[in-house]
Image (cartoon, rainbow, N blue to C red; front, side):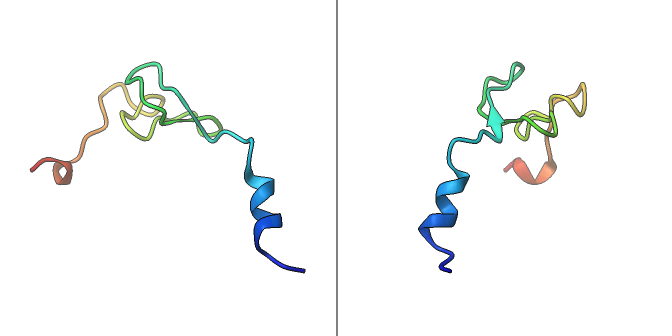
Length: 54
């Protein structure tokens, strides 16, 4: 009936990201096997963009 707390409670306990072995951040995606911080699993080069630099 309601789409509030009952639906949100089903999302708990599942991990989408774990600790990355290359950068050490909690950003390695379990299903896609790619780190969102350093790009491990996708590229041998570190993930970086020009818009990140000041």
